[in-house]
Image 1 (spheres, one colour):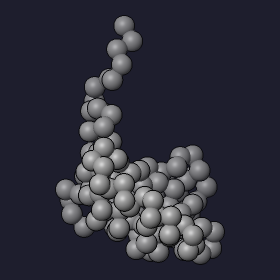
Image 2 (cartoon, one colour; image 1 turned 90 degrees about the vertical axis):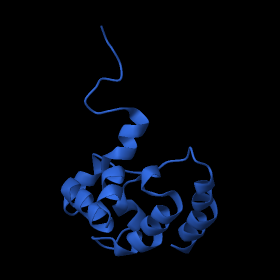
Image 3 (cartoon, helix red, strand yellow; image 1 turned 135 degrees about the vertical axis):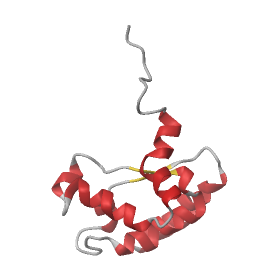
Image 4 (cartoon, helix red, strand yellow; image 1 turned 90 degrees about the horizontal axis):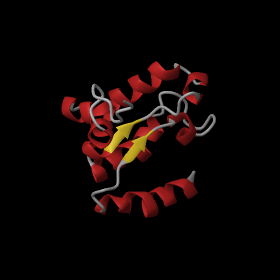
Length: 117
């Protein structure tokens, strides 16, 4: 809605000037709102995703699903993954958003971050 768009423009996008701010792209169905922007959420892409990518860059965006709630949505988890991937034209950007940014922040997937021994 207009209030959400205004908040996005005035409060979230300006945070791009701070290099330590990273944005999680998640719960597309919640951002779209019931019935207003049905799957595949083209309005979300145009109003939210594209401006975020431009402002923050792929190295400061990371994909999330809003699990387990995404399972209740059209096309479930796979649909959420496919939609976001389809919005990203660059293979390098896709690699960052779909896992690289999270791995940079939280550590490599193949090595434990906590040693329990």
